[in-house]
Amino acid sequence: MITTTTLDNGVRIVTQNIEYMHTVTTGIWVANGTRHEAPEDNGVAHFIEHMLFKGTTRRTAHQITREIDSMGGILNAFTGHEYVCYYAKVLAKFLPRAADLLSDIFLNSTFPLDEIERERNVVLQEIKMRDDSPEEYIHDRFHQNFWQSQLLGMPVLGSEKTVSGLSRDSILRHKNSRYRPQDIVIAAAGNVNHTDLVAILAPLFSKLSSQWHPHPDNVFISSGKVQHLTERREMEQTLVCLGTRALRYDHHDRHTQFLLTTILGGGMSSRLFQEVREKKGLAYSVYSYIISHADSGALVVYAGTEKNHCREVIDIALREMTRLVTEEVPQDELDAAREQLKGKTLMSLESSDNLMTRLAKNEIYLQKQQSIDDVLLNYDAVSSSDIQRVSQELFRSELLHLEVLGQVADLGLSLDMLDV
Figure 1 (cartoon, helix red, strand yellow):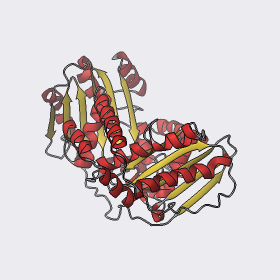
Figure 2 (figure 1 turned 90 degrees about the vertical axis):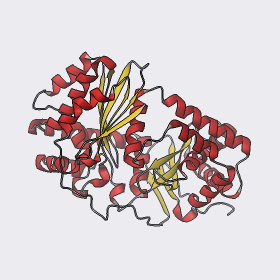
Figure 3 (figure 1 turned 180 degrees about the vertical axis):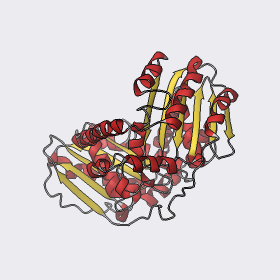
Figure 4 (figure 1 turned 45 degrees about the vertical axis):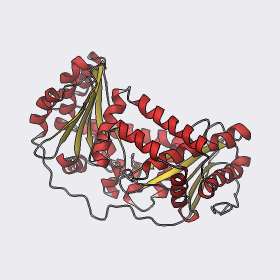
């Protein structure tokens, strides 16, 4: 069901045909994001994402939006630290039109000066909106401070200073150099014919070339520093992000890590949810999640609580991390988490959006397509001793990093794992 064609210049076209679906989602991915920017141009990858919808040699910005609306489709984009994606979701009968539209904005955008200035103001408002949203802000701040002084720690949106300083020349220079054919993956999933899609895309993308090479020093180096950063803000809640180093995206223990995170804070039956919310009523929202990059990662616990309970919530999180280090997870708890993850994985396959994203990330991070059967088998192979072994690798005092946002007094806290 999955077919891949690699053009002579390195562009990969990968499709997954699901005949019973009514839709097709097509994404053009570039494995080049915020961490590949120069610090003085921080935010340029995200700015380019905005600008590709502002007119091409064939279509105005209004014609782009009118055309996707006339298909009843969705046209959008997103930027990460290691990639950018432009995608369209349409009924299968409109795929040729959608592919032409996507290709046009990707290859033929004109970057008009007046649109650059207009969109600069939009992005500056987006930065302010992020900073005014406490939950979004603390996750963004955690990422910046966890990878402090490294390119991986730069914010995706950039800063007011860097975005204000972006010129048309610097924007075009970044796009023309960083959008290398060997870093481009075109993924399509749903009711799609691979041969037909390649026939549309190959003549357009086979002409791309780039001489730019990533800087050899642009790799993650662990600082090993313990961080405890508090920012005071007038808020009803105090927000907490407590995290540690995690495994890179393609690590052979990644399925163990997914299960570990699910047990810790991955749902209503997770240990953190039960201890913090159900037993003590200290938070409405409490969970854990994984940030995965090509060469590093972070496992983060988040909670929102009252300022007087902040220290107690942190202590519970540390205690639950310690339990995973010192005790094997009971078999019934592991089996329940395993079925939870397997169920979510299988249910995600009912969306052409998720299927498309999975195809592209497999190409970018794994350089191959992993079957769903293999994923499920990998979950089945994880044992309680595997969970404990990976916990012992990740949950160490010297790797922990804490962010606190809100009204909070001095916590009098050291990030030592409890009872270890």
